[in-house]
Every structure is written in C-alpha cells, then in structure tokens.
Length: 472
Ligand SMILES: Cc1cc2nc3c(=O)[nH]c(=O)nc-3n(C[C@H](O)[C@H](O)[C@H](O)COP(=O)(O)OP(=O)(O)OC[C@H]3O[C@@H](n4cnc5c(N)ncnc54)[C@H](O)[C@@H]3O)c2cc1C
Image (tube, rainbow, N blue to C red; front, side, top):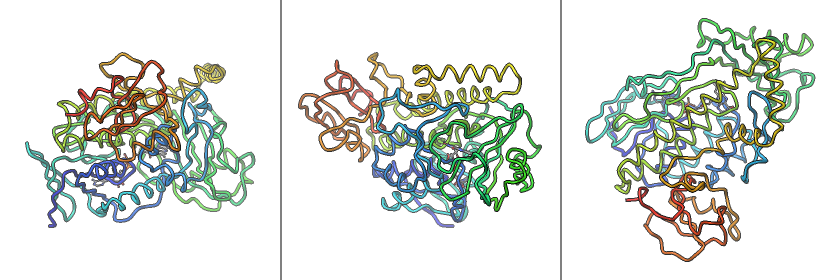
C-alpha cells in the first residue's frame, strides 16, 4: 500500500474538487486529489457557466480558458424555461457560457497541473478515520494522512454516507432524461446555434417537457425530456435507445431520423441537502452536499462557488491566520445558498404545468417576467448574482459581491488572481496585513464609502476596510 502525507485530501475530481484543489494549491497548500475513475469519460451533464461563475473564474484568470473551450454564448438565463435576462445586473458577464462540463473539468485540471498537482486516478476513496490531529484516508492501493478531507465525490458521496449525515429535502415524483443525439438532418424548428434559453423546452402534454439545445456540431443536440408525474422503478438503469427514439418521434414525428445516441442519463426530480457540511476535519462540497433537478442549470455552478468559498478559508485555517469560527462560515454561507437553490428549483418544477389552472399560472408568470424588477429577481436567483453573505455590518455593500471595476488598463478582478484579500481605497493606505493587496481607486460602486475590504472570493468583507474577524 502506497502511503502519502498531505495537508488536504480532496475526494473527487469533478468541477467542485478540481476548483477546490486549484484554490488550495494557489494558497500553497499541499493537496492530494483522489479520483475513482481511471480515465475521464469526456461526457458532460452540465452545459453552462452562470454569470457569477464566469465572474469567480475571472477572479482567478480562468475564464479565458473556459471561453476558449465554449461552443456558445447564451444571452439570457431561464426560470422554468421562461427566459430571464441579466440587464438589471451590473456585471461584465451578462450571459451564460455554453460549455460542456467535461471542458470545464479539462480547463481546471490543466491549471491544476500547472500548479504541480496531479489527479490520482483509479483511487476511489473507500473509507477514512479522523482523530484530533487529522484524517487517515484509504483509497484503492493508497493511504493518505492529512489535516482535512473534503468530499467532492458527487451526489452518491461515500464521504457523506460514512459521516452518516441525513440527506433530506423535497421528494419528487418525476424524472428527466438528458441525451446527446446526432440527427441525420436538422429537426424542424430546432435552432442551429444556442443563443437563448427561450423556447428550448416545450410542454407537449400534461406534466411532460421536451426540448433541444444545439451543441455546436452540425445536427448534434442535447435532448432533454421528462415527466413530472412518473418515474421508472430503477432510475439508475441505462436509458434504452428505444425510449430516446420514441421521445423524438412523439415530439418531431417520423420524418426526423436519429443517426446516433452518444450518451443518455436519467435523473430524478428529488432535491436533497446534507444536514451539515462539516464534521470535525471532514467537509463536503458540491453535489456531495446538495442535489436537485437540473432546472435553470445551477448544480455545477453551485459546486464551483462552494469551492471558491471554502478554499481560502481552509487555507487560512491551515496557515493559522483564520480567526476563530471562520471555517464554520463555509457551512453557514453555502448551505443557505444551496437551500435557496433547492427552493427555486422546486418553484420551477411547479411551473411545468400538469393541469389547466397550472397552465394559466405559467402564462401569468411569463407575463410577470416582463416587469424589469421581476426579471432581475429571477435572473439573480438562478445566476448567483444576487448572493449576499450575512455580516455584522449594515451597509448594503457588506457581504455583497464586488461588481468588476475598470481600473486604468485593467479590471479589479485582476487584483484577485493570487487569491488574497483586496483593499480598494480612495486614499493611499498601507496594507493592514500581509494577506491584503492594496489598490487605490478613483471611485467605488458605493459613493459614500472610501474603502472596502474584499474577500478572496470577491465578496465585501468590510465597508470600513477593517480586517477584524477575517484575518488573525
Ligand atoms: C442530466 C444532468 C444535467 C445537468 N445539467 C446541468 C447544467 O446544465 N448546469 C449545471 O450547472 N449543472 C447541471 N447539472 C448538475 C451538475 O452536473 C452537477 O451539479 C456537477 O457535476 C457537480 O459537480 P461535483 O464535482 O460536485 O460532482 P461530480 O461532477 O459528480 O463529480 C464527482 C467526482 O467524484 C468522483 N468520485 C465519486 N466517488 C468517489 C470516491 N469514493 N472516491 C474518489 N472519487 C469519487 C466521480 O468519479 C466524479 O469524478 C446536471 C446534472 C444532470 C444529472
């Protein structure tokens, strides 16, 4: 058995685990990444980066890499497939990046390799034991001793199960299927470029939905279909090709021919949230901590932002610069965000109509989205742009995301590439702590403030520039 010593073990090299490992490596933490699969599948569940995820990737200089691999720029988001735009938001990225999950993972793994961390593949975590000083993790053929373990091992997380944590939420009745389908010819009415979420999915009989997203190759589409009211007994069983072909026929008629079904996967409409995100020296992030129906395209985005929230806090704890309780704010902040996502997903599911009165409700809801404040509220919910963390300060800026500012030749986001705190100040000031980068700015988005301290993940820590409670 190979023995390793590290500061943090990350179990799972999906988007969450790879983002977290990058954050830890950036902070100089010795991290080991264990991945069950011997090789990448190259398959993708998620297809999008929400505007806030684009912003956080930009904070680390990673957005360009993702955009190079993208196949579409989608002008709006959606709520229950009712398009909601981002015009009400002050962001440099008022769009969704259309990018397969496998490409997000490839971009993150490429950066991780540049930071000298290799993913240890074929090493499934099979167990762990924790004591006061650390965690001993067993993976196939490997034992690692570390100060912390983070389970980023997906919805069926072995780490969460070993912790015996309740994983409860909203029990659904339905299911959905995603399949990547190559058609012989373009289906009638199907878009050839993914520009908007509008009308991608249509209801064609009560409780059912079906739609197509073009994947950037001629006649290759993501087919999504499902039923709010029924599910097969075994959700994990392979999706039969005949079922996918039947769904295509039902919606588009016999004249549309399927050339190849490259991948198909079934999922439930259950939503679940782990009762805790931390037990001693073991933490959870991403799908290991929360799962839900992929309404609005939020899951991957939630996981990447979990990682962005946890990385700098865990690094601070390991380096002795975290004030008491800082690491626990990870659960406080991110569990509340996930809970809100679960609620918006439940609301979206309720807008897939089953009865005539629900159809009328959906039509009314669509009309309401024409009101700018309503549209802003909904796009804020699904994009992550409305996230604001609780702080002791009452100023509206406290805990809010810093909108990216033009600073001379560059942008404020450039100041965050090293993963440190940033003090933006209108008057010259010395750095209050070695972990703080200071930048003089002509203006702030809040005219009554003269300086703000911004956390490494881009949220305002203090509207007076104080490091109290943030850096020891
Ligand atoms: C059909 C479908 C469509 C979706 N579409 C979208 C979308 O459009 N937008 C969006 O944002 N989200 C979408 N999602 C959700 C998104 O795919 C997930 O939220 C995302 O994959 C979560 O990332 P993760 O890294 O937390 O977990 P995963 O992607 O599940 O990664 C977990 C990793 O851990 C590994 N692993 C598992 N067990 C172990 C172990 N014991 N030891 C070591 N490694 C282990 C796995 O092999 C895997 O590589 C969709 C989901 C589904 C099912």
